[in-house]
Image (tube, rainbow, N blue to C red; front, side, top):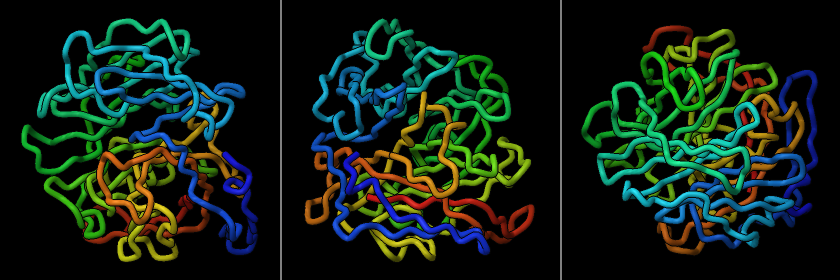
Length: 352
């Protein structure tokens, strides 16, 4: 991304363990000019690789920077020749040196998760494999990661067969396309700030990352994507916690990246240049969550949003470049559930 957007003065306060940031006055939102949603980007060496839905298929772009992706050639790597329908939100990851693209497809309530793979980022993908996720319910926005020596898959889905709310679920994986065991809910849209816009209420777009303490986070999008209340929030697994046990996860007490002051977590400010930022991607080396930045470092991210002053519609969403860093000594609190009411650790700050 351009230097003006990516350079921040970072002040580490050793005594408190809190990191402070001052953004330059001339920082601007990084609209790439690409009219699209749901970015997924990783870096391999000096090359940034993105994946996106083309409506009836999936395309890959490659560039030397995140800013350059919008102008890079779009190469179709998979087409929906079987007529699955509604190809949504592909996610590109690497596992054992191989590229995997996960996406959801299907008409209405038939949406399920699929995967294609190749040894090369922009060619050689075969037929899609349907993931046999536990309980076989509506599923979108899934992605693979490794934590604690175990492969995991996290996604957004319905508890049953009715579109009441989208929860976040996790399951173990025996290999990149084979779930094992049950599915476990880790988040439901039950807080007031993530129920501003509903019918259904939404937790979606989960993106895992590991903090400087080695703890797992899943940053997700809350509120309906059709609204400018769309925002990013965080789930933090307590130190030594079990990823399959919902009460070992602590949720941020508000949005960490959003455009409405009233839904932001205390100490977090709303966006200046965009409305409804969400469905982000952490731009990591080989997509490996173990390569997340150390304290104080400012790392690239991408997200979709709508420019302020523009009607908030799906058609007006664009890919934006941004950045994030770790923010220390932050308490997430809760009440009337099993386990301690407060957990303190790393959170995240996001920047346009």
